[in-house]
Length: 405
Image (tube, rainbow, N blue to C red; front, side, top):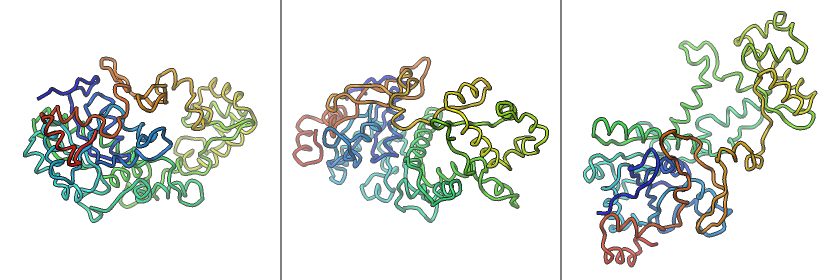
């Protein structure tokens, strides 16, 4: 059998079978691929749904797909056909991890289960990323980012902070957060196997992950039994926690600790308030009156330009930054200098901006351009040869519509 391809990175030598689609799962597996894992993306003959979300230059190579599937290899396998399932299990025998993000019941219908996988490969790690833990009454329900944001109270927090209607955060917040948690959980299972030699099944539920994320900030008085207050972290929920308007734009200012408040009051000529106004006594009293204090900052900031305030605030060691638009990020000099956003040439999609890997290692190469996001089935023949299939067997799979390249 051919040996595994040689990928650079701290996860070099780890092989991951990626059965995920859309965003949450692919984001998780791309974090592993960026670190050097050999991620084999198994796609149906129609391909990952996100391939079709434009804008794009070529069919099935949409912009979101390009940003969450680099450094992977794509093989087409129709897992609903017996021959496709057999090929999958042959690939799984060579793998360290299998990741999926559809409901476990659907995986069972396909004939892919942890019990079957560990018979073929006892050290396999079988990671499921889906909506709700199988231990609770919501098990098996469908889940998407919007639904999980809603159930984990994110729109409620937006409403409480703004005084307006509940709104989803305009990011795939749940998908991205849970995808990162999945990467952590998978690597923890890999480490546990290195110690024990035993593989395992791993569940990463969206709802529970996001509830942990939300309540860590907002459990507040309900942390204690009996409760000593309501839910909600006041500093995050007040209306005046926002970018502040200046004479010529917007500025983000965070006056937080004792020294920063002392310096800010000095800048606006109100130093005496430190001793005369009980709101400024300590972080506890400031938190109780935080909306009033942020309003004070807002009114002060409105009297000068961005440049004037940046000079004053930086001189006083008070955290501040101008407000970026999404377009600003594309030309931000820091991001360009650090290489997070750079131009690359994709073999089929031409020149494009690529979002790099934000973390760096002193002794290990991380190469976000090792492999561009693949076309559908681009690596089918290569992978089938690696698992030992003959040219005749591969041709038969193509003829029967099980695979394509």
